[in-house]
Image (cartoon, rainbow, N blue to C red; front, top):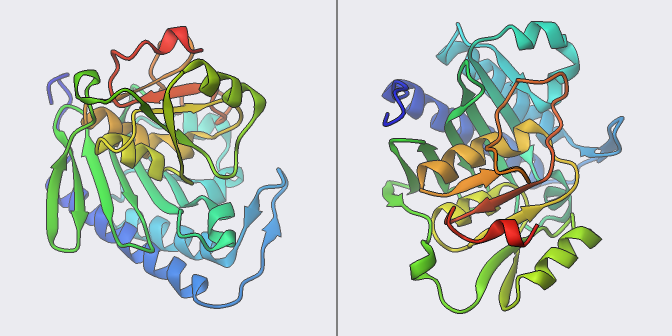
Length: 272
């Protein structure tokens, strides 16, 4: 890699993509029938699909990389903070990102897997869209790719010079708050593109979107895979002070506010 990190082994890349595919199949098996929605302690929804994908991913990653621990959204309470903070490398997983979209049956949900190194950097990410079967993956310093069936394409975020008059801005279908609405107003001429889950990062990485602002709660498993893919495609994710996110560095797994950009040269500081 250009930053001195060793590239992720091809066997791990292909193995993780295969595991994401298997998790997507488990999700679709639930999606095809009636299912119950249960509220977790934080009031977020969980279904049998979340849990089925969790087991597929955790079991698969333990076989693929037995020396690398796995932190999944559906099992964070089982891992003491001191234990995970001592990990030097880890998988950070959201088995079903966009459960609200899953419940709405609009297809805008995903499987997220990210490999985190000892500096808290997301060095590899995979995002699978179960309904379409599309997979995006990337390694910062190496490149980002989209895979549709047997066809793989290198992808690149859209530079400032390549955009038209209007910025294409990702807007969450399920999380729109007054601060986001005010920021969108400051952007001027925009084309809002409502989209659920971490698929927003994928669309940024392939040049279909320019900006994804997010105020309000997210967790580390919501952003890690998307950040790796977006950075591999030439984009960036910053906190309000201009720092890229790092993972498993704090007591909490909650993220702060962020803006994700197809082109880091966009004047995002004037918008925040």
